[in-house]
Amino acid sequence: MRIQPTLASIGATALLLAATTMAPELHGSSAFEPPRDLADRIDTEAIAAIFEDWNRSDRPGCVCAISDRQGVIFEDGYGMANLEYGEPLRPDSVFYVASVAKQFTAASAALLVERGLLSWDDDARRHLPQLGRVDQAITVRQLAQHTSGVRDYFGLLRLAGSHELDYLDNAQVLRMLARQHSLQFAPGTLHDYSNSNYVLLVELVERLSGKSFLDFTQEEIFTPLGMASSRFENDHRRVAEGRVASYEVAETELRRYVKEFDVVGDGGLLSTAADLTAWGRNLMASAVLRPETLAELVRRGRLADGTELDYGMGHRVGAFRGTRVVGHTGSFKGFRTRLVAAPEHGIAVAVLCNADNANATALSNAVLDTLLPEVPTEPLAETARTSPDTVPGPIALEASQLDAWAGDYWAETEGHTRRIYVEDGVLYYGRDRTDSALEPVSPDSFLMPGFGIRITLDFERDAAGDRALTLRVGNFQTIRYQEYQRVDPEEFDPAGYVGVFVSDELDARYRIDSSREELHLELANGERAALQPVTQDLAVATFDNRPHALRFRRGTDGKVSGFAITSGWIRGLWFDRAPAR
Image (cartoon, rainbow, N blue to C red; front, side, top):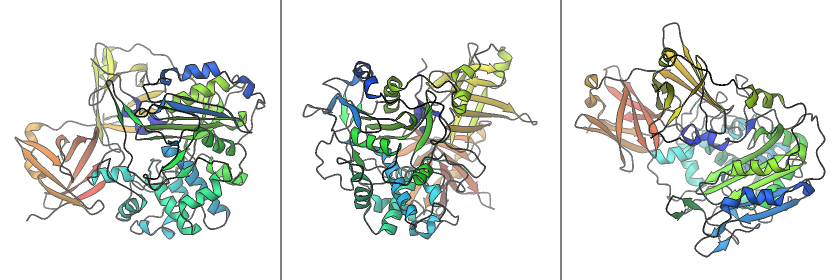
């Protein structure tokens, strides 16, 4: 039986954006007047129905707050804040809001720009010694827009042998980043979400302001906006009144997450739903930033080739039901958060959940759907372009037309393989354990239904007959695959790959050994994984439920001299073969 995969198996970016459609930048002309009766239009019964599945005394849940331009007009809690003590969620419950914190980190840097202490186009290496080994210029703007090429520290730490429960703070992250001398890609050429960017921005704010990041944000943002329950936390042992616990929700049991983690900037913020809507109101009429500064934060970024992003600086910019929305999501250790504002309608919605299976994006969109008036007569161009009404319906193809695309495909940037095959007259997109049926809309274009977002697969064949596949998740993620031929096991000699390999950027040692003609990869922490050959000098090991590709390189003597590892989050991290002892 095939199991329908989640969006996480398509791509991490798509998981965050599953219910949002890209749109033009936040500020622009509007064909309609914002309503002035928002409070009167709140349907409390409809909102309660949205959270009905969470409103139980034996489960974690969510808190929702709604604000108009003047202040909070609705807030309520559904489910439990702490199952061990039987405490229900309340409107003033304090959550860890994960990446929603990035909005405030970007705003902190923006305040320094206003004061002339910083420029978005400054080379960040000028302010940050941690980037001193990097030989390419990285602008502050590229850090804030996730286009810097700096590797994500979560991926680095895992490859270095750390466990998810190991203690971590900003100082440790910065020490690891200081070891990096290579980047994922040339700055400005790709958008690749990396939490490291925002740890570096915190360091920049502290160096240029002369204050701790906690004091700076408290004095410059939270206090002026009346966010009395909000504070960055760099000591998880601190008592925080009203703090909720978070949970892993399994089929037969609930398990508490443990947070021994004090990194701030990319996350690290404690807040309430009502407090977050104060920032939503700030996105409508800024109280802490100049209007032109705010516009810069929420303006969609561009890559060097002109490609427009759905991300500004610390803010995602998109559309919902034909109206512009801006905000951010957060997901970490069982907490799921989203703040979204529709400035032209004067609406801000915050949904904070303490269960790892909660979809805060879908829940906040459902709440927003009860508040928005009818879609404007003239829909936004981007919304019209991606409207389901404009998507062609499925067509019938001959068996030979489906067979034309069956084969094995490799994604270099993601480091994984995909198998395209035909079964019972249907073309399938095959993963490691879960496959998706595809619907043809032309002989070389297919849709992947069932995800609540448009996913397309476009096949092509070049003059030499080699095939390629481009997978697009909405307007947010594009993955390019090339056809490859699987290695013949009888022609594969594992002995040439055996040895010890070291990375100075990780300060880690890996070992490759073989038994019964099979290769195994031993990580820095002793964990082992089978190493499956893909082609000559390319193999994949799966650990943490994620494929990790090892592309081997040979020296002038024809022997393996090292490999570069790619795992989706981490690309091209180099390991040298250690000299034989």
